[in-house]
Amino acid sequence: MTNKDLADLIFPNITKTVEDYEKIYPERDLPEGVYVTRFAPSPTGYMHIGGFYQALIDYIIAKNSNGIFYLRNEDTDKKREVETAVQLIMETLNKYKIIPDEYEYKEEIIGNYGPYIQSERIEIYHAFIKRLIEIGRAYPCFCTKETLEDLRHNQEEKKMRTGYYGRFAKCRSISIEEAINRIKNGESYVIRFKSLGDFNNKIIFEDLAKGRLSLSENDIDEIIMKSDTMLPTYHFAHVVDDHLMHTTHVVRGEEWLPSVTKHIEMFKAFGFKPPKYIHTPLIIKKEGDSVRKISKRKDPEASMSYYEEKGYPEMAVIESLMTIINSNYEEWHNANPEKTFLDFKFSPKKMSSSGALYDLEKLNNISKNYISKLTKEEVYNGLLKWTKEYDKEFYELITKYEDYTKNILNIEREQKKPRKDYASYSEVKGQIFYMYDELYNPSTYEWVNITDKEEINKILNIYIDKYFDVTDKEVWFNNIKLLTDELGYCSNMKEYKENPDNYKGSVADISTVLRVALTSKSMTPDLYEIMRLLGKDRIIERIKKLEEEL
Ligand code: GLU
Image (cartoon, rainbow, N blue to C red):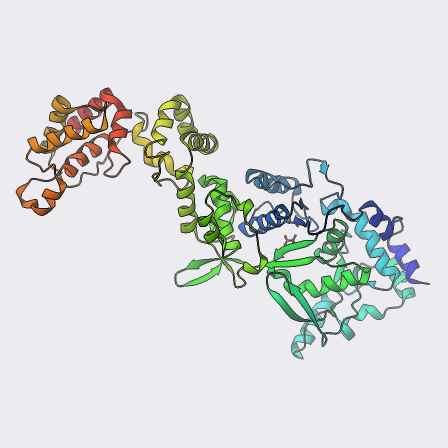
């Protein structure tokens, strides 16, 4: 009985060999210095910001070098409905235009290195496991859960390193005959990798982000194939897939760093060259004076759906993530405001090693700035798209009053220093609702200095009777000044500041009365523009209604 007999017993139908697959998936025909990256999420039905962050890095690395960015769905922990989860991943990447060059979606495979869904690659993994068994580098392990728990307890009691290694790797020494018999008897087993490493030996591992690390060699006989599904574990699938798909750079969470020596040993067992690794820091956030890991359970912003629901422009979200991907991004972008993140040269060395601090306030600033620079058409289209999904009522209104809405959105826009008022599309309605009679139904008015009802009525009436004019901004303002003087307020702010006691108030107070009367708000964008767009009829109507209420 030989290893080959054992391998044939376990995989009787696997006829293709490692060499066959090497031929099916040949080296990519790419020039030197062109990188291949992949985003390899486990489809869970939830898109974590940390995953998207990694995808973004993968994408930039590939695009920086004119290389390939592909998507691989790692569904070997198959307990959930994968299809909708894959859909979520694809839709998110598409939304942000982080489009993979190769992927598998809705039964269509784009690219020559597929399938790109791991559960569809089971025969490939089996061929590779079969090879390891044949060469004596993998073996069936029959240890039950209980045996393994006992082992762990024993090791813990003796204060030894826990794990299935060295003399603790019981099933290593089972003879081929015995293994064959036990399998034939229907005993349940997993396949383990047989490590040749020595934990006391150090190897130098170079992580592109974290630098040179001295790590203990792996000596754990890791499980590479599960018993029930015969699917590979992450560790093994990683080695096979990233080899066959010719990934040059693996970007993945730092939680995988402790496993990297296992992976390197497995690559070596096949005689393959491992890829380069970039282990990314955790995304963290401030909480009080300390920082903590961003949490799926506690923080809505941990999910990419948050940004969609709030209506943040995709580019603003990308920009905010870029600032935590590379510490020099912001400076670069300030110096090159016309360029996009795709022009930026990513450097793994400029990644934070202690955690990437994400901050919604920062996102809001970036987003306000971004939206302020859009044209009215662009904001309108962004708003249309968002409201269509999340606010039907407003969607219908802005569709009905398309030009009017564009003019509203254009107030203090398309100029050198545009107004930065919206961080997301969900904020727009709350800031311009008063421009629509359908939405304007104030129950409170934010009166400021002038609060006396009779005084307010008087100001408004005289304004409408004698001074209303919105054909020209200068004339408009001059009229307000005339009104101001007529009523005993001061139209010259400088003079007013010097002698406030000589007057009932200032031109600013008068304007505020008009502003509040027409919008209910004490702070709005340019009042002249608002009044011009509202028009005389609507203004008179609002003032009349207000008078009735006062
Ligand atoms: N499927 C793994 C995860 O979601 C991917 C790690 C990797 O990128 O290799 O954590």
